[in-house]
Image 1 (tube, rainbow, N blue to C red):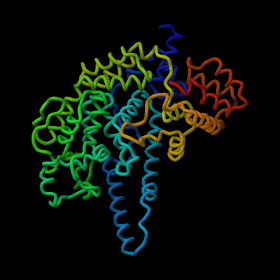
Image 2 (image 1 turned 60 degrees about the vertical axis):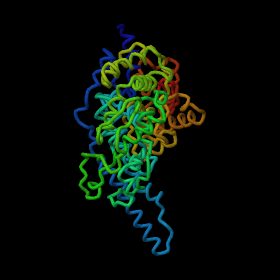
Image 3 (image 1 turned 90 degrees about the vertical axis):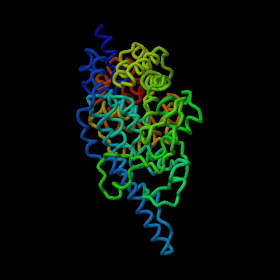
Image 4 (image 1 turned 30 degrees about the vertical axis):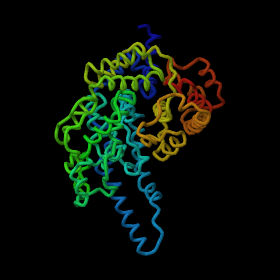
Length: 480
C-alpha cells in the first residue's frame, strides 16, 4: 500500500471505527490501520480504573429500592401530620443525578484515554442495542453497571452470552417490566392472596409482554423478523417467573452473583410454541432454549449485520457488506470478534464516503481525545449532552438513540453544535499560544482527512479560540 493511502486509511480508521485520534496516535497506526483495528478485538484483561471505582450492580439496585422505601416512609409520616407529600421527583434528582454524573465522567474518561478505541466504540454500540435507560425511575441507577457487567465483558465474545446476560440482568427485568409478568395459569394467579416477599414496586397482576416483545423486535429478529403476536404472547409466558432475587437486597448481602432467580409459582406451566417450535423444558431452561434458537435464526444475523454496518459505515450500507457480516454471524453462531473483524476488513467499509455525522456523545469524545488538556467534569458533560439531545444511557425508549444522520442534522441541532464548538474552543484556547499551534494539532489528529481549505481557515483565525472553534466545527471533525 502506498504511504499516502496508508495515511488516508489511518485517518479513516480513527474516525469511522474509533473515537477520534489522540495527539501522536495517527503515526503509530499508519503502518497497518486494519491490523491496528483487529488487534483490539480481544477480551479486556482488566476493567479500566475509572470503572472499577463505580458502584456494583447490587449497589445500584439497592440505591433505588432503598430510596423508594425511604420515600414511602416519608409519605406516610407526611399523611399522619397532615402535611403535603414530599417532592419525590426533586428527591430522585438530588440523589441520583450526582451518581449519574460520576458514572458519565468515568465513561468519558475511559473513552478519552483508551488505547483500544474500536473496542470501546463496540461497547457503546452494544449498549445502544441492549438498552436500559435512566429515563425510567425504576432503572435510574442501573445503566452504568449494566454496561460494565453485561456489555463490556462480551463485546469480543459470543452474542448469545451477551443476550443471556442482558435478559437475566435486574436492569432489563425491571426496565421491561418482567417483574410484573405473571402466568395466567400460574400458582400465584390461582392463589393471589399467598404472601410472598416483594420488591417495593407494583406486584405482578397478569401477563406482561414487554420483555418478550423487545427481545424479538430489538435484540434479535428485528421488527420484520417473521414473528407474530402469538409468538410474543407465548414467549412472554416462557419468561414468566424470571424475577429479581429479593432476599439478598433486603438482607444487604448482595454480591453481584445470581442476579435473577426463577419463581416457579409465577411461571406459566406447560409447553409453549415460539416461531413454530414447541419448548417443553422446565424452569429457566425453557427461556434459555428460546434465546439459544433466536441467536441462530437467520433474521437475527441480518438484523445485527444491518445495525453494525449502519452504525459504523453508512445510513444505507452496501448490501454486499450486510450480506458478508450476516454470513459470518451465521457461520460462527454469533462470534462478535469474527463479525467485527469482517466489518473492518471489508472493502466496502473503507470505500464508503464519510457521510455519517457524529452523534453528540461521539463528538464530545472525539474532542476529549483530540484535546486531552481539557477534561470536562460530569456535571458539564451532563449539561452539554442534555442540551445537544443525547444524554447517554438516558434514551426515551428501548429502541435507544437514532443512528441516522437526518435525526441529528436539523437546524437547531446544527446551531447547538456550532455553539458548543465555540464554547469548547474558548475553554481550550489557553493551552495554545496561537492559531499555528492549532493547525499543528488539527494536522496531528485529523491527518489526511483535513481539507486544505479548512487548514487555511484555521491558520487565518484571529487567535487560538477562533482556530479551535473552526477545527471543532469543521466537516472533517463533525463527520466520521
